[in-house]
Amino acid sequence: MSQLLAQLPGLVAQVPGLPAAGSLVIPLVDNPKADFSDTPWWLSLIKALLIFVYLLISTLLVIWFERRVIGRMQQRPGPNRAGPFGLLQTLADGLKSMLKEDVTPAAADKIIFTLAPLITATMAFVSFAIIPMGNKASMFGHMTPLQLTDFPIAVLLVLAVGSVGVYGIVLAGWSSGSTYPLLGGLRSTAQVISYEIAMGLSLVAVFIYSGSMSTSQIVSGQSSLWYMIPAFFSFAVYLVTMVGETNRLPFDLAEGEGELTGGFHTEYGSMRFAMFFLGEYINMFTVAALATTVFLGGWQAPPLVSLINNNMFSGGWWGIFWFTAKLWTFMFFFVWLRGSLPRVRYDQFMRFGWKFLIPITLLWVVAVAFIRGSQNGWFGGGQVTVPGVNRVIPTATLFAVGVIAVVALAVSWVWDNRRADEEARAVTNRVPTEIDPFAGGYPVPPLPGQTLREPIRASAAAIYTRDGREPDAVPVGVPAGVGAGSATVTGSVTGTASGAGSTATITTPKEDGRG
Amino acid sequence: MTNSYIPLLFLLAIGAGFAVLSVGTSLVVGPKRYNRAKMEAYECGIQPTPHASGGGRVPIKYYLTAMLFIVFDVESIFLYPFAVAFNSLGLFALVEMVLFILTVFVAYAYVWRRGGLDWD
Image (cartoon, rainbow over all chains, first blue to last red; front, side, top):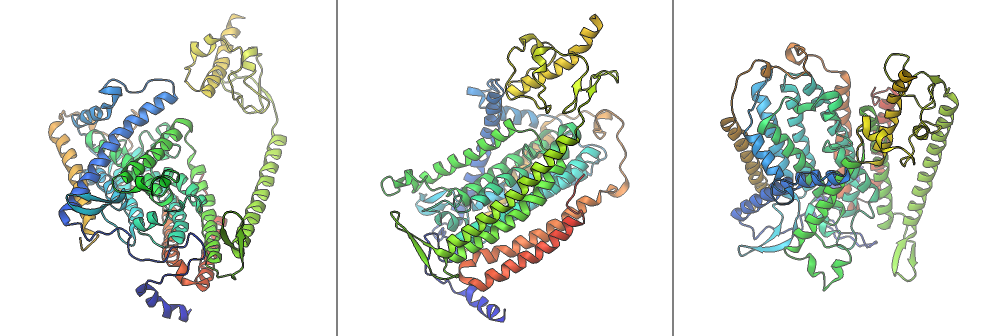
């Protein structure tokens, strides 16, 4: 230990270039790769303004994009009136919210009530400063990186600023002087900080590969291989946590309108509400931009395109194109999730974060550390040459990967067995009974395994399978009138099936009355 | 730029300026019609429950979550310098870090066992 402590000052001071054992090894360089020596202060100011405009326009577009795509997924057109293809819809909404009355409830803490949305909106913009959007390009006669700034702890800034943004949520909930916002704010805070741990841990594996927390350094380290491949599990964890972190469906429990009305912003209206809205969408862009930078090679061209003409499509302003394309892939992912998944329950959500994501990400960090250690030759120098590909793999790496695979298999085997036991027990414990759906005077749907006393229509009977689940497809022969008559038919297939199911329950008394 | 943190302030100032300006504009431009019911807290149409002075009581679970958050966030912060300097630290640091993670796992198992991670 004392030996290590004695080494530490030397480690900080010197920049050792280590012998590369694997193709991924990057020498430890403490400084950011991006060079800002030819960037005067006014150019930084212009770049800050450009980032601000980029974010504002992206937000205006993504809200329209989200509503249009969700509309398509639900077989309706979405907003298509304001401007070409409805593109100006968000602008119109923004103007409308500006012209509305700004109500402050009498019970609210006036100053903090106004301060909270300002904190959220302001903090949302800051993180984007360290996101590299392109390689060097010429701006006003200066060669400058397409990135506002960079420093050795750049990624830490995103996490720190995200944590400050939580203040906006908790203060808004507290200062409203109302019950729903208070509960929504507390929930949201608990949610964001819980998923921040897993998010922070998932990035550790990337730092082990890149040897730096500077974003430009991380991007340049991915010139041969994007980190989403060696750190694939981190990428998966990050994808989950970034949805939890931004309060988006299926994790938008803070705004669960069925239980909390609007969550922490129930009492807000007008522009102060719009600030929360803006903050949420910019936060989505920020976490997506960090994912792009850290896992998807940032502004670099995709693998096959990068082969063209000595990687000409990565240089200069091209970076912004690739960066934006990758960013919007994540945006589509967000919208897709919202269009497909229902909201999870709060205890399930917290259990998943605390009891699954955190321990398994910690184990993954240890696994990556061992793999990297073996690549550095710390566990002996034996090597295996892969014939044909001309790639050298240390034997210790193979050993480490093998051990991890065996452990993962064993854990999943135990887990599967336990799940199978639980399911078997659930089946045997279930007592299928016949219930009278109208015993209490109003229709009660059957529980899984229960059957209704009244004989229901043959077409609707197909809906209830043995275990009570709905079949995947609409049963053949459901008359169009059954679904459309008394139940709302939503676009999706399962929606139609459940609509027909509830109709069958409801229509029973009519027949009862007639008979 | 000599100090790479100054551009952050530019972006912070622009963002804050935009937020203050839009909220201020809506305060000036928007209508103001007084209505006592409008100023009441929203509670789905019923009479709002008055809040206890000082914010009232909050379930202990949230407090517990905040404490656990600090424990694990500090852990991940300790992991960052280790990860960045990984290649130059050598095998000794790897073993040390595994021991550190195991130590935190003991606390984690204790909290799990005592029901600190359960929500109902």
